[in-house]
Length: 148
Image 1 (tube, rainbow, N blue to C red):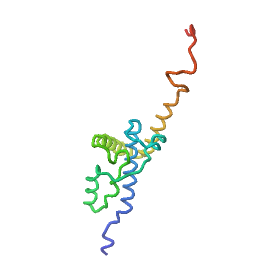
Image 2 (tube, rainbow, N blue to C red):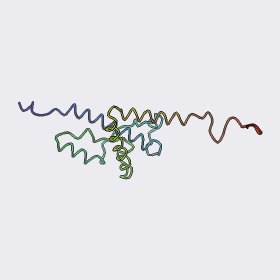
Image 3 (cartoon, helix red, strand yellow):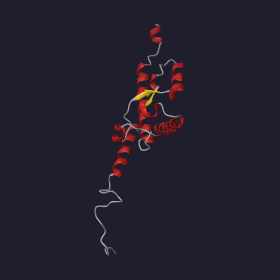
Image 4 (tube, one colour):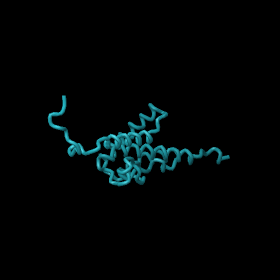
């Protein structure tokens, strides 16, 4: 009977780990792709965080909090490579972005935060490529005397 009284957190922790990774990748995509903090070519090319998730000392408090309620703590232990071992100032920016994204998820429960981040990145990429030539080196010239 003791087996039935113990809650099975494995499915819960898997779900929490997926949500944590999604939120982390969205925050890292927003914070670090254009700033040069993320040095992974794959992330820069895709314009979305896709690097490995690594255990981070930044997450120690969250891990301990989960362990205190009987979970393993593994669901929140990892952060994207670009932030996992960075200085606290970078982590603070990342954490603030994560909190904003969490609030958006609360305010808009039907919004998939990571997919929304991918769409934002895709729109940003599309806007960069609207010009057919570089702005300072146009391929065509304006004729002298033409115009109203």
